[in-house]
Length: 79
Image (cartoon, rainbow, N blue to C red):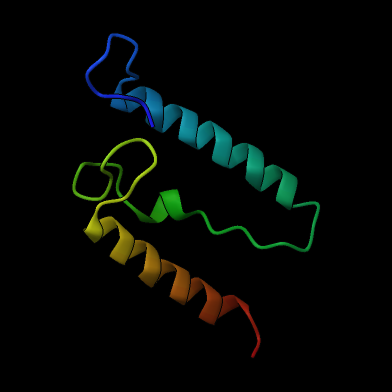
C-alpha cells in the first residue's frame, strides 16, 4: 500500500488509472484461457466509503465484494 503521509504518495486518480490499466491487462490475458474474470472494480465505486487505501477495502467494501463474488459464482458456475 502507498503510505498516505509521504511525498511520493499516488493521488487517488493515479491509483484508479493504474488499477484500470492492470485490470484490462489481466482480462486480456484471461480471454485466452478457460478462467473466469470478475471485473470487481466496475462493481465497486472507487471512493473512501469502499476503499481504505489503494489495495484494502473498508468493511462496507468487503461486504460489497462478497455480494458481487457470490452473484458471479452463482451466475457462472454449474453445481
